[in-house]
Image (cartoon, rainbow, N blue to C red; front, side, top):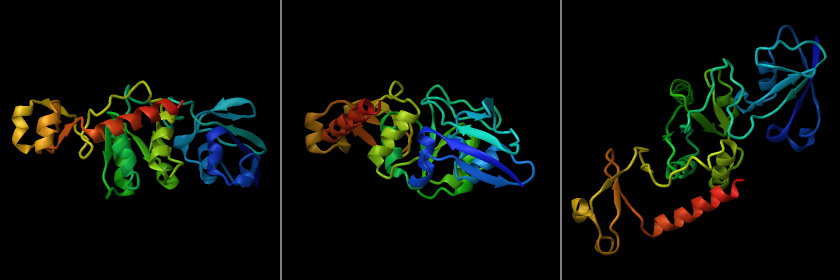
Length: 247
């Protein structure tokens, strides 16, 4: 039997109960075990890991843990990709996301900020993993087990249950404050919006909308119309507040 001591820092402590947050974790294992496998055996997804140090030297996920190793595990710095299992992980200049079935409100918020977000309420885990792996998208989920799938290169385990706090959390983790463009995508289908002349849709507008609003956008995919009404102003205020409070 072999033994190793693991210490987790900063946001990685969120994965442990209060009694274990600030204590080294000593584990017992047999044979040749990679540091990635042992980290995930403690229910910490590889997608949330940034840098790993063993006995003072930095290693990658392929490192084989030796008897009595001391392992220090850190999260990625905000805005940086996690440690990759194949050293090919890198976020797009403006990241795209895929969200699991329980994050519908967060998906709408991110689309409001102009981010490319895939979301359906009937995605299966295998489908989410395939989309994240093949489309260079960041998988957002509260399911640690899903993030531990080998195919997942970039992802993040959402800590909060409240959608408003979830948005602030994602903005902070991926440093999105300088990336957003308000109301550039359809909130329903994610397609980029296009400007449209008022006279081209005049018959579809309610009387007060016709009278008071003049700037309209349309989704060329699902035909939904958007304009800067009272709801727009409320959401604009909310989103700007979140972006400002996420520092």
